[in-house]
Length: 423
Ligand code: UD1
Ligand code: MG
Image 1: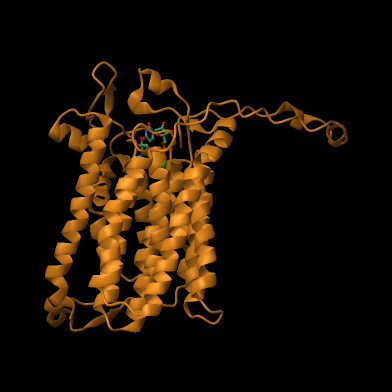
Image 2: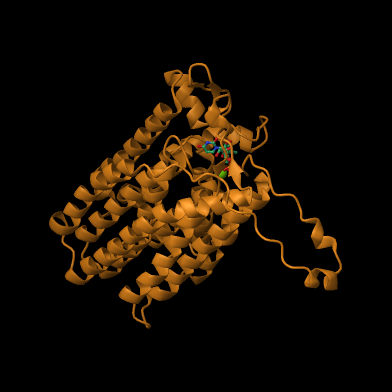
């Protein structure tokens, strides 16, 4: 639900049908809005290099990966790279069209300055979602045979993500009420939940086996319920940890990078082909997510020339949830999501309606100093500002992204120490 104006209804829609057919179709107004600022290419170049070097080191040298599997991963990486360039180029084009349809937002953290009066195009997540889906469909040509067992689940995963993009865009355009918004991901997750034929068991950690009396616990339909709830959590938790230039995409870029490293390490460490396939499958979804998100980041990083919209936050959350579900590492995923879990806990009183919840729970901006002050709204952004003092929007965003990266590193350390519990 963006702070934007919708175009007024065309009165010609009221005319009689035969009159309407006689009249020539009114011409679309020309695309008069000035083009958006060019992408911050330096930012994506630095981030891509920073991530690619250790990642490809793991793929080529550190981890033992069979030739065929490595080939598929590299084909997927090459497609993702192409997707990155297409997305960077398409965002300015799409921006002009969404502006023409009055789909824009004002940058609230710049209110009172000239930048705060600029119409920033909204919902550019739609470009990322479409490019991602095209890559996902094309990749099947290179990787799956017609009788592949994975094809059904892979397409169900794409259907869920596609459904989420659609519902996110509907939310951006129609301003869906907050309580309905919460439920949208559970509808979008249905194709995956119904097609899911994988295991519904959880492995009990070694120290708990004597107490539970089982090594493996089959949760049955409750596992599917858990998967649905995970999708609802991942999507909404990204959407409410937002409102600073670069925060929505930045957190996704960091979590997606951590998921990729986790997948590669698990593929390298295991000899079980099913287990490897599950992680490869997750990786095939997250590589394009990371590449297309980096492209959006180049437009969304401070100062934003494009807003991502709920289309993107829902899409990114759903893709990561699907990757975690089908890769069978949802517990690890939840540790990567520690900042989002904290933000959710801080938000609970307002989300539950115990404390009044304003439309935007953002910090207070002082146009004189350019600094943000934390308000009493329960968000991690406000908590950090109250704890560490007033900061610029860029600094607080960097702090939160560093915190996200620390949470991911912590997850790797925790997994390393707990590895013995599951053997
Ligand atoms: C969620 C949050 C809301 C937060 C908003 C910001 C809850 C319950 N809802 O609402 O508190 O204010 O996200 O995204 O926690 N915007 C900026 N700068 C940015 C990004 C967004 O000013 O860097 C503003 C713009 O006016 C933009 C609008 O936020 O148009 C988008 O808000 P939207 O995503 O529609 O809000 P919600 O997801 O409903
Ligand atoms: Mg939002």
